[in-house]
Structures are given as C-alpha cells and as structure tokens.
Image (cartoon, rainbow, N blue to C red; front, side, top):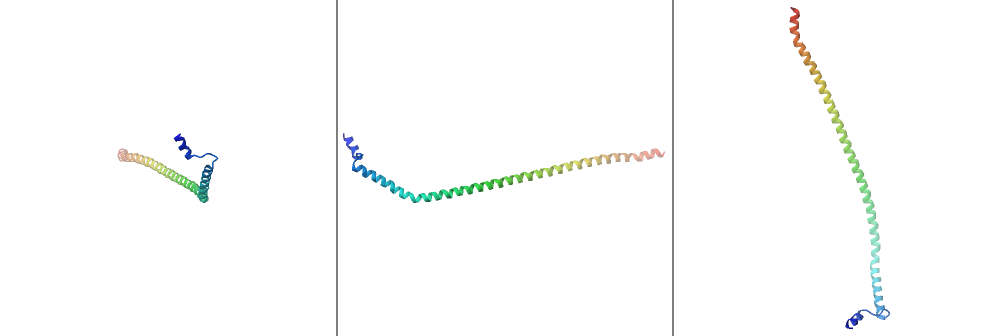
Length: 127
C-alpha cells in the first residue's frame, strides 16, 4: 500500500483540478515551443529553396562538364586516329620507296654484271 500511495502522489485523477493544470501547462509548453520554432520555419523554407536552386545549378554545371569531357575525349580520339593514319601513310610510302630502290638496285646490279662482261665480249668478237 506504500507503493500505491507513492504512485498516487505523481498521478492525479483524470478529472481532478491538478490534472487539468498539468495538461494546460503541457499545452502551454507546446504552444511556447511552437512559437519559438515558427520564425525558423520561414528560414528553413528559404534555405530549402536555396539548396534546391543550388542543386539545379550543380546539375547543369555537371551536365556541361560531362559534355566538355566527352568533346575532349572525342577530340583526343580523333587526333589519335589522324596520327595513326598519317603514320600508316608514312610507312606505306617508306615500303614503296624501299621496293622501288630494291628494284633499281637489282636492275643496276644486273647492268653492272652485263657491263663487266662487255670488255671480254668485245675482245672475243674482235678476234
């Protein structure tokens, strides 16, 4: 029964005057807290609008940067392709010149071989 008395000291009957006072003070506390928080709501709403605008700007900036990156990557790829084509053309030209020089050298070697036989043929025919 001592514990029952202790529990009753902290709680009042629902319809009693002290319960109404406590409820009123709790409601007043909520009203006070709401009154304190109301000015901050406008600030929070403004902050939310600013953040939303910053997000839109950041997305647009990111989109532009991505486009610039893609252009840069395409430009580098195009430059590499041009360089590759130019190198291939140079190598093809070098191979063509090499074959041409080899053909001329072969022809000159054959002519030199024939020319070295001419003095002997001339001597044989003059006899």
